[in-house]
Image 1 (tube, rainbow, N blue to C red):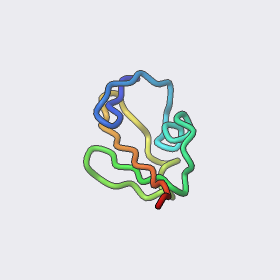
Image 2: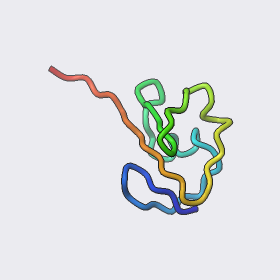
Image 3: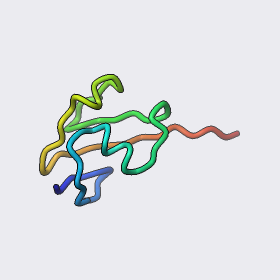
Image 4: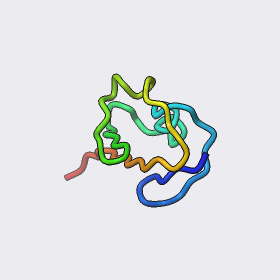
Length: 65
């Protein structure tokens, strides 16, 4: 499936937003997701089915000083 992730085209074999986050091995507690301009609550990731051509933004918070 062709997805636009953080502005770049990627071909992934995933079905849900939760699988997208897992594919990139991101710490789910530190990630905010946006699909087609709408922020998706973490509790809805497993229910959010991805479709060809979707635009997904993944933002991971990092600590530092």
